[in-house]
Amino acid sequence: SPAARTEPPKSVSLPSSEQTLVAPAVVDTTVITPLPVDISVQPVGHTPTSAHVHDSWASTAQPGPDKATMLTSMATGTSLDGHEQAVALPPATASPPPGHRLSTVYERAAPPPPTPVALWSIDELDIPPPPAAAQPKTPAKPPVASHTTPRAVHPAARPVPKVPARPGLKWQPAMLAIALGAAVKVMLPLPPHLGPHASTLLGVFVTTVAGLVLEPLPVGAWSFCCLTALVASGGASFKVALSGITNDSIWLIVIAFFFAKSFEKTGLGERIANIFVAAVGQSTLGLAYGLAFAEALVAPALPSSTARAGGIFLPVIKFLSKSADSEPDFQRTKLGAFLVHCQCQASCQVAALFVTGAAQNILAMNIANQMGVVVPDVWVTWFVGAVVPAVVGLLMIPAMLFKLQPPDMKDTPGAPAIARIQLRQMGPPSRNEIITLLTLAVSVTIWVMGEQLKMPPVVGAMVGLASLLATGVLTWKDCLEYSTAWDTLLWFSVLMGMCGALAQDGLVAAFADYAKEILVSMSLDWKAAFAALHITYFSIHYIFASQVGHVGALYGAFLAMMLAAGVPSVLAAITLGYNANLFGSITHYASGPAAVYYSSGYQAMQEVLPFGALMGLRSLLTWGVVGMVWWKFLGWY
Image 1 (tube, one colour):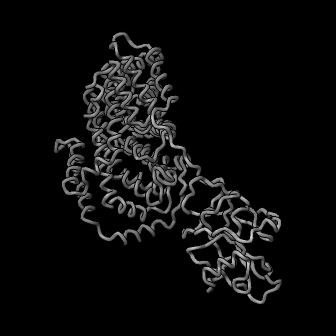
Image 2 (cartoon, one colour):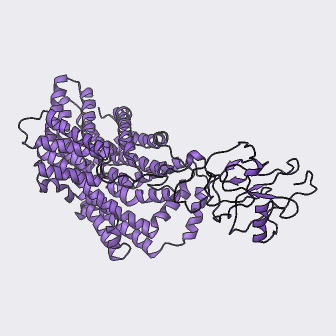
Image 3 (cartoon, rainbow, N blue to C red):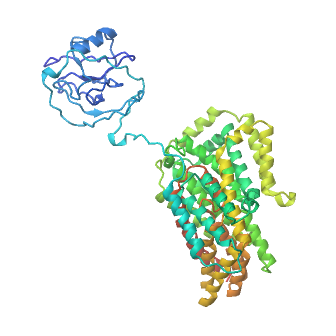
């Protein structure tokens, strides 16, 4: 270009159908400041698949010569408009033409080559010009560019193609899980009065739980293999091993998944999510607190924590996450993982807040009444004793998980305005949305008035699903294709059946007797015995897949031990009831809500157990320290 200019150079606009890789001519930078040029540099011998030309002077496009003249001009280096030259970068070299400097590396979203092509970072690298003889006089045919906007990619951030995992068993975790079960069967002494197959049953149960953690196979497949081993070894009969499949809590979980499907299919979940974001969506932490306290508001009227999780809050969380491009298999940690972890942990505090917050609470109070412990005005007494430690827990959980599982998206100041715009665009609710909402209202009514109507919660869920199928909101094909629901039905029922077999064979009672002997031998005062029994009652839930089953098997025994140790009767009865909710999130099979949230796909196994143990310890400390101070103030001891 000329040494001096009297006017800025004109820009070059290439036709979109055939853009090529171009470096700008050298200009007088005291007059014109060029912008970075997008250049893709590939190994010798490879032809670029696509490229994108940026106007080096960022001026508006000017009329240019036709495509043939333009390509010929770029190939020969002649002037395009009398002011500037554009020199094509030869495809067979990684060096720029004389006097040019490569500054930025970009990747194009063009059709992928048959084999991966490496990019080298040459950012801020001055490459000396090659010999003149190395410059070919005619470049190769310019590649056809994609119309997609280029995206800058750091070389370290380029996705590495994943090698598909070999299907079948992962031998190392499988052998470890089997070894743990075998060690328990051989080394753990059991009372002689237990049945001959008790040790086999316990060993297979330990192997099953270890496999759910180590994942040598998908959860459902591993559970089926362990079920087969249990029946084949004689540890339990087929009828006993699969007895959990008739448990109403499991079917409540499965039907809750279909409720969530109706929220997704009709758009009702998206509408509720937008309403929620419009109200409290300024930050991710605000969303977590809003969801937690929203569950506390509906819990008194909805006595099934599983129904709350699967029928209401998981669909809302899924739509909130998807609206932020956070899917279980794509950007899981952007939003979805944090909200699911928070709601799973908060659901335990909410369930403990009201005696009608979960089925196990009512069962615990019935057992206490049968044992002669009279709790005056149960609903009010329960709520007053739980309100302070539960609210403290609800305040702590999102803040702690914000540090443990920080979401990639933390602040969303524009989200409320966007949500309001989307609500206007959605218009009034559709027919299917209205039917879904009315169906949920009918199910909730049955859940609330279950005792008066003599209907268990699962009947309300069944009525709701039947209504959705009859009205065409859901089809049976929709249900059959929802593999997550059927997978959960299998593995959760297998665990439930094993836990029932453990209680039936006397293993659970044997563990309770062993704990009682230890406490008696230690001669503890009532406060120390109170703490030790609560820790034991909490920890033993690792071998349970049902809170109701845990309460039915152990609540009476532990209440009797507390009363024998001198613990005040009301304090012992109600706090054991509280405890039955706090361990509901220590594993992915600890409760119905835990299974629902884990099956959403937003929780990873390497997070569930550590977070469950840590947040469980937090619950014990909060309810044990703050709770004891509050209960002293209430005069419970």
